[in-house]
Length: 87
Image (cartoon, rainbow, N blue to C red; front, side, top):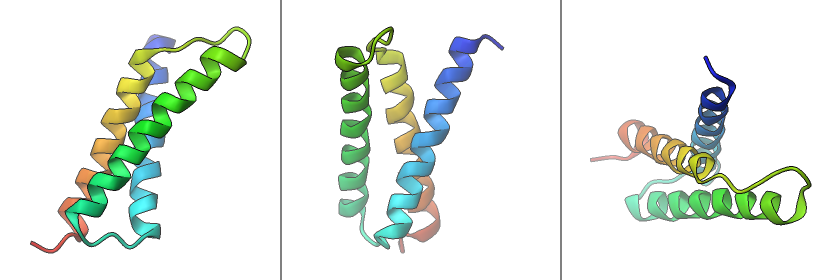
């Protein structure tokens, strides 16, 4: 597996974990709160990309990384929704 693709899976897994743990920490019980956590995680992902582009030498903004962050965040809230939100 190419290192570039492995990097995307790492981003996906970290943001899946981040959103799932955030849902657990805040004891999320509504879809509105899930949406808030998802948007917050997506914003955090692009913020990290912007900071590393502007302030860290030899690093650049990669929209592919951000896409993996957003996809992982969505997976985290989706899993939480399936398991813990009462229908």
